[in-house]
Amino acid sequence: MESRQENNGQEKSREDADDIRYMKEAVRQAKKAYALGETPIGCVIVHEGKIIGRGYNRRNTDKSPLAHAEISAIKKAAKKLGDWRIEECTLYVTLEPCQMCAGAIVQARIPRVVIGCMNPKAGCAGSIVNLLQMERFNHQADVKRGVLEEECSQMMKQFFRELRERKKTKKTCIALRTWPTDVTPAVNSAQAPSRHPEGSA
Image 1 (spheres, rainbow, N blue to C red):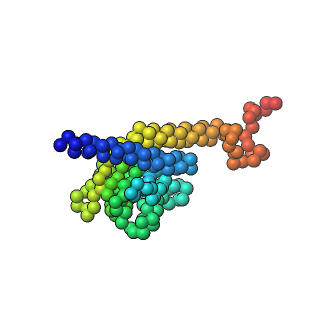
Image 2: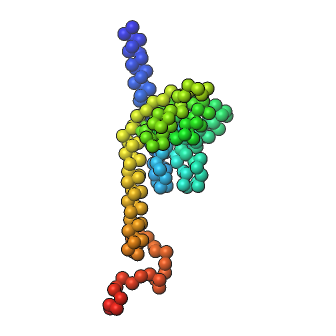
Image 3: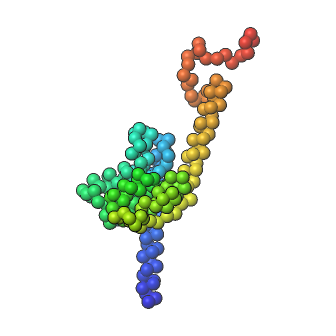
């Protein structure tokens, strides 16, 4: 009995270590989205210890509502396996999947999903609804949440904080009719407003 418990403990520790390792790879993908000014979401799919699909959010870049991290990774994994069924795989994603991505995970028959941080406003793996484990569907996935949660959450918070600051700066510039030194105004010098009060030298 003790030997069996010890073996189970070792397997659990090994699984936890692997989950952290592959979630770090998903975070690496999310940072690619961040660099493009996209919401930083990254995903990898692992089969027999190897990453067979990678993806990151490119929705604005590609001008496509389908360009989510999970969809991209699923497409690549299916191509690698030569089958639409992505069985015996684990999907790692930095943010809880939306309804579209959760549906794609179910359709692809992915058996295990590991999530970084949850998405209370739009998540469909437990926050709003849990599409990954609905008993009425013909497939349910095992779900693990909170792997590298703090790192994934902080990355999202930093991105949106910077986004709000950029929007605030833009509004201020428009209100004052001035521009930061690293931004060229969309008017020529003849049209630009004078910096001096009317009538002054």
